[in-house]
Image 1 (cartoon, helix red, strand yellow):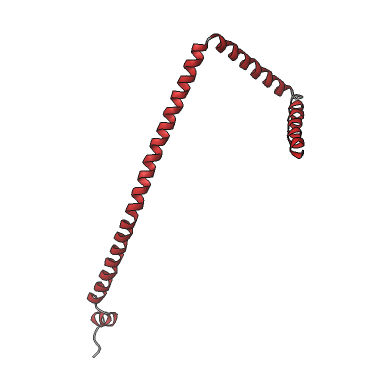
Image 2 (cartoon, one colour; image 1 turned 90 degrees about the horizontal axis):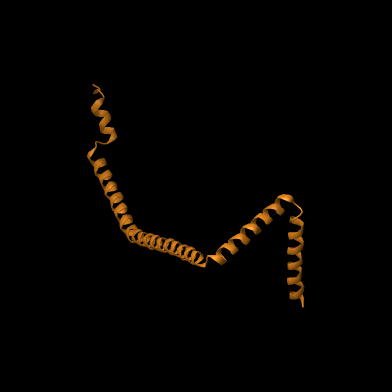
Length: 128
């Protein structure tokens, strides 16, 4: 019973809202122009059914090609994402190995360079 009132309420609200919007002159003119346009299109295509059929087929073909292109792009992107997922562990390993190599080189450079105390004694004149 309450569902019946709900649907009636929605319909009544739509009718009242539509009627209130028709009080505006611009809205009335717009609705009338659109109604005339639709009526003329219906009359035209009722007399020229082959053209309607051709236009519909053209639209279907156009949207199919858009869908096909979108599908192709989606598959391409999916492949690239999967490739990136495969490459990521390899890149991570490469970066870790590079970091380790630099860390080892840093330690080797430190052992080659003279400690700071010895450097001062080389450049400072000897006290006698």
